[in-house]
Image (tube, rainbow, N blue to C red):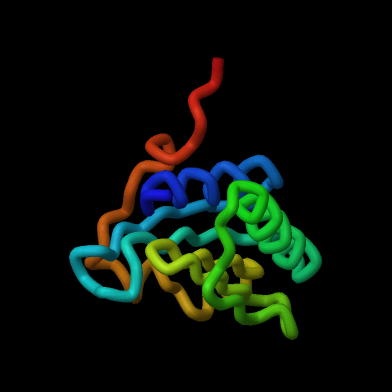
Length: 120
């Protein structure tokens, strides 16, 4: 699966399960880490875990498994590494503290509409 299609699947899952303030940052021109960061918030550690679980489950159904998953112990920041796309699911407080959007401000903030499925 191409990285943009992978990012679209991730965004669709997060959106469907009520992830908040979903952002997609294109970092492919800045780093070899990945092509995209997908960042979302949950309202509690329980929702953060659920959002991450849904992403993993729904992508596994498409035959895609992460290379690494971190953060389930605290559930305040769960990172799911799919190689070309890295997913960050935060509690609001933890997201504000680490402020990845500021750290990666030289990346391209992509419109969410490019990644959400079209509504009929």
